[in-house]
Length: 283
Length: 285
Image (cartoon, rainbow over the protein chains, first blue to last red):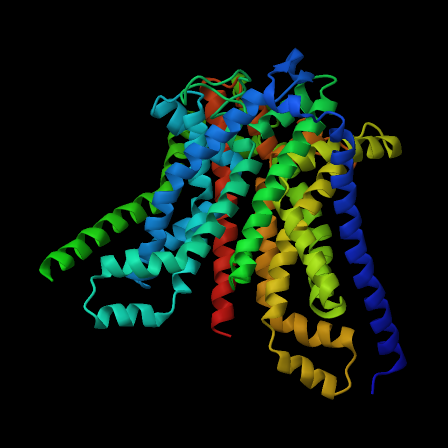
């Protein structure tokens, strides 16, 4: 039987648990509430369609949203084919061989590389060595390297969740592995792929440090992918650190960013939960 | 049949090529960091980065120690603060909260995990820094950095802990209940030891995130280059240093910043290896 002191400890622990949960909730509400409270006054439809004026203190976000979208587009276009192909190889063809182990290990490290180091790399490789300069292309490709591990992990999970019978049945029918992949396994892996896509997108939208020295600061409307373009996150950073009196606009932009991210992340959870893969988000 | 097997071979070849590219990115990053830091490393070696008293790269002084101590102190502080909070919120979700509350709380932690660091930075800068400033001027400080970092890595630790606790066999729990052991004692003496390696992995992931975090810490820490003497002193971390100086760095200065990038990468490789080592221990029981 539990002694009195054990019962007291149990009661204290219960109180501590609920306090921690309340504390975390309170901090979260404080943060979101603060951004929403200061940002709402700065948000209107007009903001989405006009250019920033007076270093961003006034005016809108149009060129910044366009640049952000283009950076994300480059990022996903570059990382998707590479990520899916790598995931297919790891899940279906390479097994646990040495090559697969090496690739996995390398991806584990890649997943932990700090974003500022991606920024250094992107600046040295894409901007300087490949001669892309400060451009949307440099920024998008740098982000592509960054989201690759997330994309691969989720797609691999998706492929592994395809029933074994699919593979056995296909082999028994003498269907080539290529057609089995295209017609059976990839369709079965679509939810995993979508979760990976959306998680990667969320990570890319949230990124700042990797973009400062790759896609740059220019807040004009980009004319091509080789133009520098300022992402939403970089805009927030610049407004809050380098523009005196830019706080209000920074909150407005942060609110837009959070709403975008909430939309992206909640679609990831909806897909993941509708399909069994809770484990995907926690992998 | 032979055509389809040739297709299969082609497919595997193409997939292998893609995997090579994906796997080579890490090497490419390492290679470019070394390449860019080579000029200064060849000239002065790695020693001055840890021995020089000051950081004036354009005058040939490369002391990274103040930034290194900034990174280590901010990381240590935030891990110390976020680990108990993160693990306890996972315990809360698993064993204390009614299912619906647990679901909402989990969702909230996942939301926190997705908030961009620049938003945490903005909040820290406009809310926390003035509060700390009122308590003990000037405000931008190691303490502000630790607090913001703690909130940022808490979700990482909480979500891994949640997964680790979920994988503890339910029989352990029933056995303890049958022996009349209280809920908290069961958690402390049965559940925690059983979930140990998963909990450690989460803490290591959180540590990695704290070391690499740039924007939030840059916005709230004040960024003066000196070893902090108290929690209220301004600090500059390795990451913040790169972000602040890359814009205008040239020649050996730029090269020196890549050396600090290399140091960061080295820390992450060590942490990932540690996590892998612990993970392997888990497999072998």
